[in-house]
Image 1 (cartoon, rainbow, N blue to C red):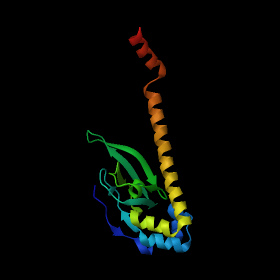
Image 2: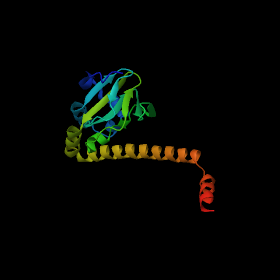
Image 3: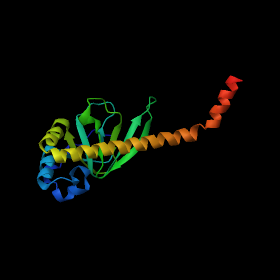
Image 4: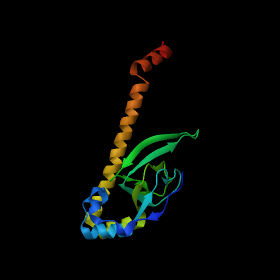
Length: 177
């Protein structure tokens, strides 16, 4: 897999096509144009790595077209699929809040158009357009909460299928009596 193919697509993007992207849905035409001007629009080919696990990046990403897969690498080196993210969805949210290592790798599954916004630029936009900035932050929070809910459901499902309460009761009974 190749590291990102930095073919910029940016300024020529049609503002009318941005309504399918959550970041832009509630913005005025002027705000859409300014946020797009602050961003990089990058086209990735199938298999291109958008984010590498363990790197530190000050970016948040939105899928404008296409799909990406999120995977993590086990200690054995085996890659484990976490989820797919499609058109309109946000990923890499931690990059605008924290300077921490990325916890997963994100790979393009097809020809994918990604909007990448640097931390300082999006925070400047939020300060300048406070009402719209609140909407963007709410969308980021919603995205994070949705991912947390899905992770919690997955954990609950795994727990439910792995160990039953009666199995635990039998083990405890064997030790106590």
